[in-house]
Amino acid sequence: MARQRGRVVLRRIEDRRRRGICFRKRRAGLVKKAEELAVLCDADVGLLVINPFDGTFQRFAAPATEGVQSN
Image (cartoon, rainbow, N blue to C red; front, top):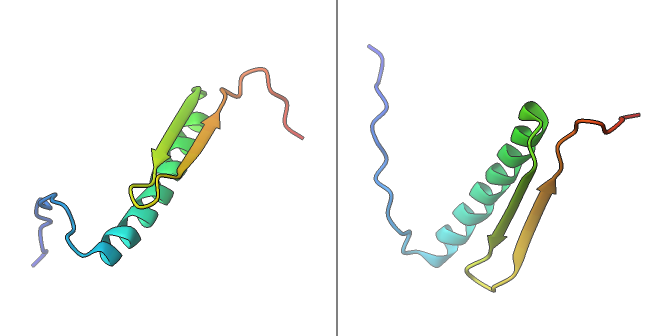
């Protein structure tokens, strides 16, 4: 008997340490998806993620690949 996936209830993670771990993992996944979108769909993609713990930010920008030669 196959187990069905249920909906995940989204709510704030109260434990600061677990919240930080979750943030880092999800941010990495989001950057990966942005890069894939830029490559697969030939789209200009920009992403800015602000860290809620220290206010630093990570940026990602990928121009469309049309007209760009690769080696």
